[in-house]
Image (cartoon, rainbow, N blue to C red; front, top):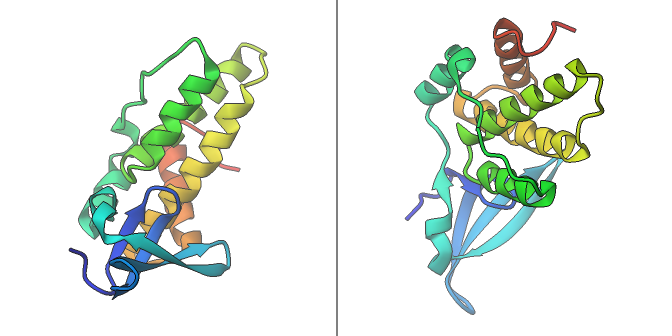
Length: 167
């Protein structure tokens, strides 16, 4: 079971902090999620605690940033873009390193479409936004830095990998 104060990945919310446990009416884990500038209190069934997992360690976060250029894109493709979007949204729920892999994959697909003078799929932009948000959030907590600092470090890694320009 998780300790009070421990950070976990909630499949729908991203990074949450375990605040307490409640027994009534059924056993629940009290979680606090940060959504933008507000904090939200969530009750999560203890019976489904196996769907929660701890965030990556500081060492894992540092290694992900350092080795970002070597992170492989996800090769999954599907003719139906709705099914493809569902697959990538499922990957995002797993936390890092999958959130970073999905963000890198979406950036690559957007860059490829633009290189061929095509408009990228709107789902690429939606999935990229969510993968990026969750990546920044988890890296920030793992490294104990602000989200702005984590975002800057991830941006620098993407620039160094030649994925994006330094704007």
